[in-house]
Amino acid sequence: MHRFKNILYVHDESSDVCEKTLQLAIDLAERNEGRVDLIFVIERKPTIISSSSLILLHERLLKWARKSLRELTDSVTVKVELRTKVIEGIPHVEVIRDVLRNDHDLVIKPIGSDDFMDRLLGRLDMRLLRHCPCPVWLSKGDSYGAFDSVLAAVGLGDPGKRDLDSAINKQIVELAFSLCAASNAVLHMGHVWFPSYLMAYGKSIASLKGTDIDDYVSGEKDLRQGWLDGLMSKAADWVEANIYDAVDRHTHLRQGHVGQEIAKLIVDVEANVVILGTVARSGMAGVIMGNKAEAILEQVTCSVLAIKPPGFVTQVELED
Image (cartoon, rainbow, N blue to C red; front, side, top):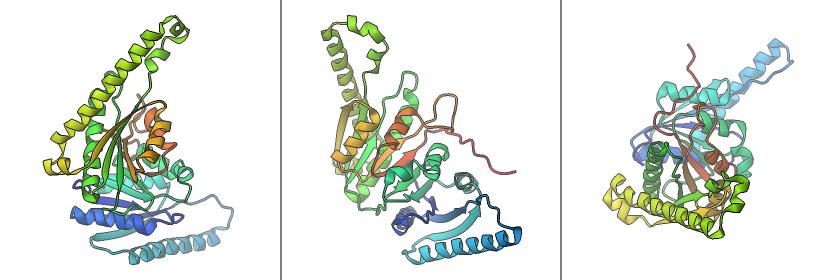
C-alpha cells in the first residue's frame, strides 16, 4: 500500500488489540518509508470535585495516559519514526484537528471490545467515520501481510452521481488489490442492489404483469453484473499489471438490503477486512454518512477501511 506514509494511531485503552493495531500502523509506514503518530485524547467529564482535588486528579490522569503510551510503544517492534502525544478535548474533534494540522493520510484505531458492533456504533468510531477527511481503518487486530480475504464493497450510484462513485470505487479497488498483493489474499468485489424502481409505482405495481416485473428485474440484474465485471476489468488500468495478474479475484452480485447482504457476504467469503466508501448525504457534507454506507456499518463483523470521495471537506475546524 504505497499511499499511506503519515499515519495517525488513535489509542483506545478499552481495546485488547492495541498492540496488534499499532504494529499494523508501523508495518504500513515502514513499507512506505513513512511515520506514525500516536494520539491519546483525554475527555474531561463534568464533576463536583473541588478545584484543588480536580487539578491533582487531572495531573494523575495525564501521567497515566503518557505512561500507557510508553508501555504500548515498548511492546511493539518500532521500525519507523514514532511520536506520541496526549491531548485534552472532544475525542473525535481533536483527532480530526490533528489530521488537518499534520496532514495525516490514514487514521488507524483498534476496536474497543469483543462486541464489534457495540463499539463501532459508539461515539468515537462512528464520528471518525462520519467526519474524518482521510481514510479510517477500524481494526480487529489485523496483521499486515496476513490477510486471507479482502472484500471491496462497490456501488453503482444514483443517476448524476456516477462520476463521484467512480472516483470512490477506483480508490476502493486500488486499495483492495494492494492489500491482497501484500498478503496473497483473495479479492472479492461485492455489489448489492435492490429493485427500488418498482417501489416508486406504489399500489399501481399491482397493475403490472408478472412478466413485466420479471423482465425489469432480469434486465437490471444483467446491467449491474455487466457493470461489476467491467469494473473488475477496469482495475487492470488502475493497478500494476503484475499485481492484477497475481491476485485471485472474484465478483459477487447480491440482491436485497445492502447492509444485510454485505454482512452475509463478509461471512460467506470469510473477509478479514471490508473496504467501502462513505459519502455525506446531499446538502450535509461531512455531517452524516450516506444511507448505504451506514447500513453496511451497522452490521459488519470484520475490520473496516472506510474512505471519503475526492473533495470531501470536514466541518471540524482548527482552532484560531
